[in-house]
Amino acid sequence: MSAKRARRERPLSELEGCVLGHLLRRGPCTPYAVRRSFQLSPSSHWSGSAGAVYPALERLEERGLVRSVHAPRGGRKAWRYALTARGRARFNTWLEPPFAPDVLSVPPDPLRTRVHFFSTMTPARRARFVAAAVTGIGRHLEVLARSRGHDEDDRRALAAARHALRARMRWLAGLRAP
Amino acid sequence: MSAKRARRERPLSELEGCVLGHLLRRGPCTPYAVRRSFQLSPSSHWSGSAGAVYPALERLEERGLVRSVHAPRGGRKAWRYALTARGRARFNTWLEPPFAPDVLSVPPDPLRTRVHFFSTMTPARRARFVAAAVTGIGRHLEVLARSRGHDEDDRRALAAARHALRARMRWLAGLRAP
DNA sequence: GGCGGCATGTAAATGGTTACATGATTAC
DNA sequence: GTAATCATGTAACCATTTACATGCCGCC
Image 1: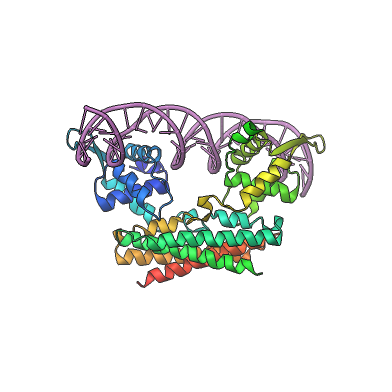
Image 2 (image 1 turned 120 degrees about the vertical axis):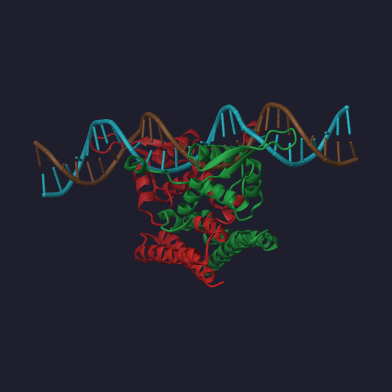
């Protein structure tokens, strides 16, 4: 028992956590369904590429967090992955506090990264930079405003994304006239 | 000439862009100096690991954006990397609009990702989640408040990071009492 | 009965990470 | 003279990405 305790569990990647969560909410899914959910979600930053999702599910199965069930539909082979009890427990520790440090620290932001080099720009270039960023973010906000979200969780994530973008816009506006 | 034009330049990664920018501001640097600047910066999310910085500089040299100068100090071998003219031009196109799409879109946020699974939590768990996140972010904010930044760019990036964290805090507070 | 798109993958490249190895310099 | 730290890497791994391959299904 102590030996079993001893081996450290590797932390889940963000994608792996999301996959487990998806299985928890939706029940057993085909890999394709998981992919599609990432592809369609406007608030996720994953492409839902096959090369990410299939290996992730295989890793999760190796660790016993997920098990695959053969569920042919029509004459067609089809695997569904279902959450195991261990998988559900693992998801919960991923989801809940205490959080890993990088969950709470400042998220990376390519725009902030670039502003870090403002000292290399002339005022005119800075002005162009800010103007282009503001209109670009505005376009993104419009897209998010049109997005509906197909459940409560989705709407919450959308609201969070909008909130973050609006905050970024305000920050840029403050940058415009220093 | 048209043949030369024809081959597409691969985009710079964020790290590569930052390395070029560092060389532009600070002049020729040793790889170690570049690493240290990433390690010490509180507003960068890179570890400044040798395994990232050394290969990045080698890639940049292969592409002719940087050239290495042998500059021994004492009896010790030491390479300094200097920006080339092409490197400076490349940095400017990386830095300026028009931006790549992911520069302006919603940055990934592990906390938002987790909130996407609020529907799987009881109200008590949600409350614990929000409370832990708020105090954790508060701690991060205190650290940032103590950070000074050693130049104008640094201070600007720090201000941006603080702004983003405060916005996240407000969003969480709104989440607390729905 | 062919075609478009849904579904299921595989392969290769990429750009990061941690961990390790090791020589030179400096502080004490 | 020895321990700490500066400096310079290398190796292995890891989770993504894009691009490719391919079979089945429903529609016209």
